[in-house]
Image 1 (tube, rainbow, N blue to C red):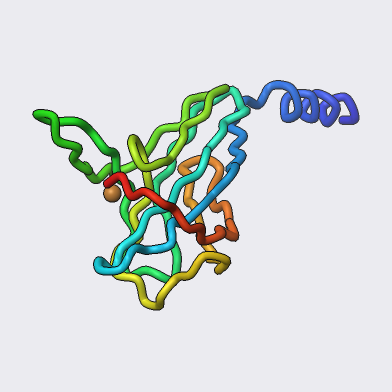
Image 2 (cartoon, helix red, strand yellow):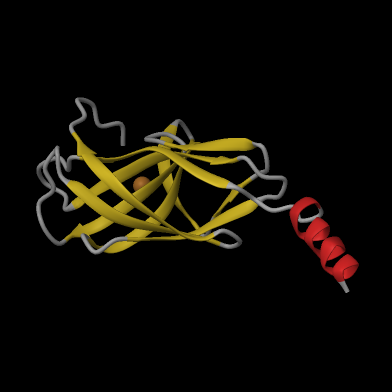
Length: 143
Ligand SMILES: [Cu+2]
């Protein structure tokens, strides 16, 4: 019996490959005057041996949150909603103005630089990751 547990332990520790998600440098852009919408960026790093997938982003400050990807079409930048974003093993995906980003649509209160916003990321395998995301001022809006 002891040997069985030792074997099981070995399998769990060394035989189990999994994604390992680390989120770095999250930010939310201080919304420009006008549209009640802003953008969130971050770097999602997967240090594990298996891919993971960002399925959903949740926050109380916006009515709706969407995953977007900016693509060039006929020389015009267009934002295309994404169902999910795959984070391959041993790599990182940067969320920023161009490329992938998180769109916060229908802000329920004004966000000012210096504010902190609670955001939940939901991954297919890693589950829920909670973040405190600072609101920052940006000088250029590439959108
Ligand atoms: Cu967008």
